[in-house]
Image (cartoon, rainbow, N blue to C red; front, top):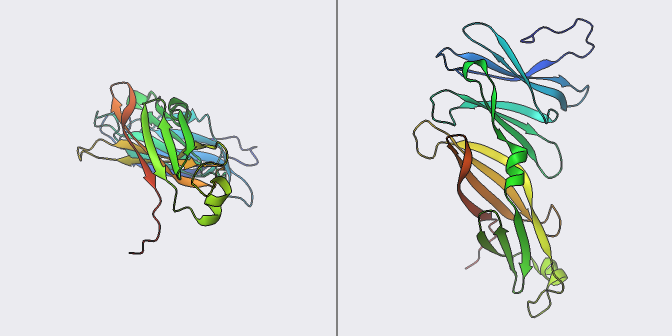
Length: 244
């Protein structure tokens, strides 16, 4: 059953693909939040994904089309991200690409007036990086936006990998630059245990190509009056077998 009517002539009408309940309008009465979409025959791919909110007090339906509205496993998380004690709506959609890229939106719906609080594309464009291979098996990860630098030791990447790009004395055979991928994870975390969620975003650090993973950039965000602001950031690296 759909939360809103559709034409009987529709060959492939939208269906509910995810739902959650909680007060998102601010009147203290639980509302029902849906994601609807059109399923692809014999495939988990879903198109025309739409945010639909049913007001628990009035039954009023509000529909919000999404800019990136096609993908896999769309889901909803309800939580207070702004500190006003009203739940906001976190939407997650997997792009399905080999890079594991995800689409994320956060909406508030106070007074049945949807407002976009977070857009994954804006986030991806907000932070600029340089990934530069250095001599002696080091890689600089530079956050140009926040003027932060991390150094990754890649000496454990394996003999064949290292011999392709380094001379025997540890110097680079030629300059190499990598890249940081768009968001592949965005997780609500209540760091302060105060009922207000912050965000932790993951972006893969890649070397010569996407599958050449060197680690992850982990960026923490928190709400600051009108927008999410940078809280802190870390570079996480992969472990390797340790023999004493």
